[in-house]
Amino acid sequence: MRSVLSLALLAANVVTAAVVSPFDYSGYKVIRVPTQKDNVKEVQRVITDLNLDTWKYPKSEGQNADIVVPPSQISSFMERISGMNIEMMHEDLGLSIRNETSFEAYSGKFILILSDCIYISNS
Image (tube, rainbow, N blue to C red; front, side):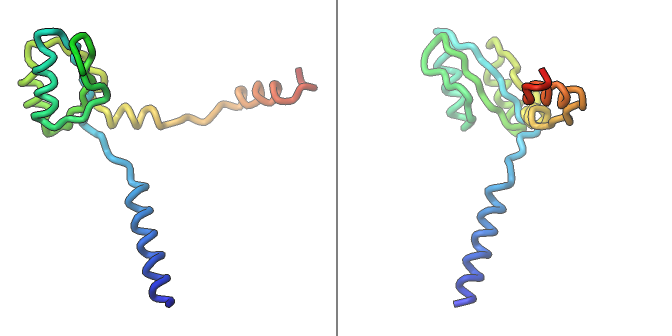
């Protein structure tokens, strides 16, 4: 009975460790391709052929395609879309994520202002 319980706890720890590890998007690019009547099918084909993830898939002309491109496929992707207008949304998605998730400590002045707002007798 104890061995079954120990095995269950070990399995739970392994699953938890696997879930906690975030994916590293270092080197990934997010590129926006505005679609038009003459390129929407080609943009869809490139996404499908290269098996790329999208933030926004272009279902019809006039919609933007926001495409996540891994480092291993950047050159082939850029070759396939050459001649199309693009907008680089994230040059390095991993760096953008790290910048968004790093926080600086609040200054003492901000905490003082906040406490003045909290306690009505201070206003």
